[in-house]
Image (tube, rainbow over all chains, first blue to last red; front, top):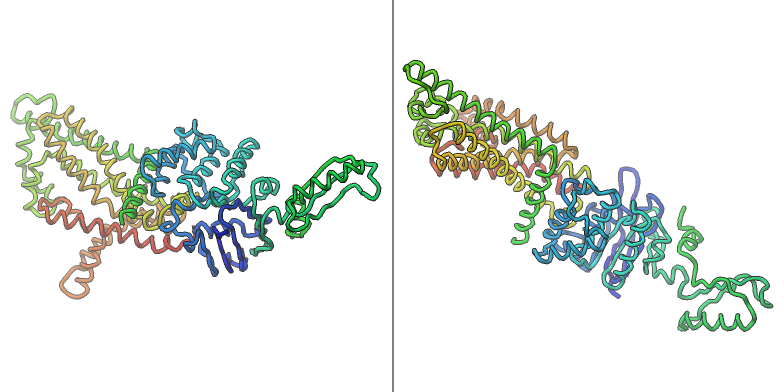
Length: 291
Length: 302
């Protein structure tokens, strides 16, 4: 699997504080990758450097094998959702998205098609021609998400994409992002670990400007090698409330789980829950990722 | 190069679109068009007063709408001297006076007002986008130079829109309130004066954009750009006093070349080569002024 993003030794200092302190980061192509960390960990700084808004003090960045982001080499290939950037309010979403699409190099018909698709993707197809000033905060956020999806980019950087969205909108967006799995690479930062666990297949933990751990979601949460079966009392002889199965190398987890469940049922166990691996949140806190 | 030019064009379109949809700018545009309308009305009333006075002296009845005695007024020495004062060499004047006088008058008013409109519009442009960070939506799609030059080109489009609106209002008033203005001649005169005023005002847009790149606050940038523009005629006058054949005088002449207001009379020249040189100088000055800000903008973390 090739890498969509590769950063080495990124440093960024704001006055007296190091925002990034030698950050190394790799995001495999085609994954939905979550960037996780506490406030001040360096997530937004990382996103801003990847998007070319900030220049790192040291270190290298490579996006899509074309070096650090420049509009000349990456425009149209990388879709970006900045975290705190306000939308110009005088225009309509369609007007804004159309100009931005043209700046990505799309021609007239492709622009119209891409803008329609992007607006539909964020459920704003019926609000494309009203002034942005009249849209709610959540709708404006969806316009910004639509802007990141314009023109079928290979890589999408989403900084807190569901922030400010109501639960239904957030859910729709999660589903929309999850549907991109395998089609393009998506890097998103969020504080919502449950949300990231649902949609991401790759995770990067950062803290104090460094990458503390990264890898496939299944590996990090133990989903591909651990099965927890919760039982109701009375337990079969020699069994407790939770039966833990370590899946051997080379054995499909589905097969190992099925074998275990069959054995437990044969022992007369009453099963209340079957869970593969730990939740991301549990793993995150258990491993002391948060100071 | 083609992609570069296309990006500059689309940023210019974006700049124009955002400006004309913004209430504050709509107000400024309204003030500009109102200024043109008021000036047209003032011109008509002035002419009417002069004609009524002349008719009274001659003991003949005046006309309901002024303009009948325009031909006579064009021979007036005071008028010729006045036109000569703002239009440069005396050789220009007879050629200029072949145009409708209303077109010339409104051309002068446009050249006086348009720099203020563009300075206001340009100085708020980049600063507002940096402050709200909406500039990031452009930055991830095109280069900073394309953004800057696109915004400069957008200011030219804004100037053309403003002068077109002002010209249309003036033409309508001229046709309604006056007689003796051939419609095509007045339209062509207003068209030419509008185009000249737009190019003349371009350096002021460059200056506004420079301030906008230095100061990430729209109001702060407007104050700085406005102050520099007010200081320009004073600097030009001071340099004019220092002008001479010695080294200091030549340096003063050279420095004067970089002050936009010193090009005023060249924009009234009836010699196409003089006007063409003034237009080129205006565009170059706009880019030079803009570049003073781009030095910062190109490196700023946004």
